[in-house]
Amino acid sequence: MSAASASVTYQIDNGGLEAFNVTIDGTSINGALAGGISIQETAETPGGPTMPSSYVTVCTDIEGTLYLGQSYEYNTPVTPFNGQSGVNPKWGDGNNDGSAAMAIQNAAYLFYTYGKPTSAGIGGNTEQMAALQLAVWEALYDTTASGSVTGTRFTVTGGDATAIAQANNWVSGMDGNYGLTGYLLYPTQGSGVNADGEPPQELLIAKPVPEAPTTIAGVLLLLPFAASTFRILRKKHAV
Image (cartoon, helix red, strand yellow):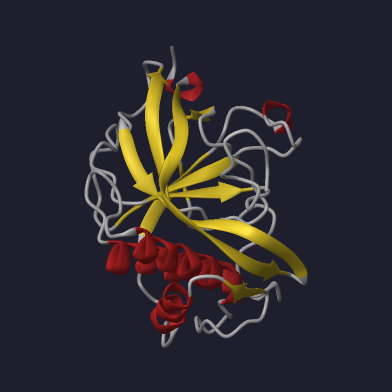
């Protein structure tokens, strides 16, 4: 099998989640789950890079859907995130001014710095994972072209006050100039795989130093990206 047709399948599980009320682009979502998402490899076809067998990560794109206990297949090899702008909704403060490039840099910096990822993914208790999740969302949707996180697309209106305060503290003073690299991992399935009709999220794999081109086993960051999130983490039905 060629590398172009290689794939990896992950089952989605609860890695430590809390519920929050949030808004994105004026739309309110109650009971959005934020925190750690555990992914477990269930299958991998030959021909692509070696992927991590298990990992704890966080969710990013607010308009994507993943179900706990369900498996999703992703294409390998992966695509560099440099030059990308996200999928539904786009990264950045929404002004089409180059803020997307700054936004993904801020999100990656948060994960490396406060998630303290190892080969097993992020650590910390559920509250710390929730704070990281909220900070990543805020960075992705409220980063301006200057790199500061001062936009107004994403807000948290209710939930764990300590986690919310921690997330706000982490995004303060960011500038988007971190020079991090990473890769997008796209799902092979479309919207038909989910009961709510929304497509699965993509995964972002980011790492601070280069690795061998055929191996991503030492991955330091996995963030789900794509089209329709807060419905994502229910066992049998969307939020």
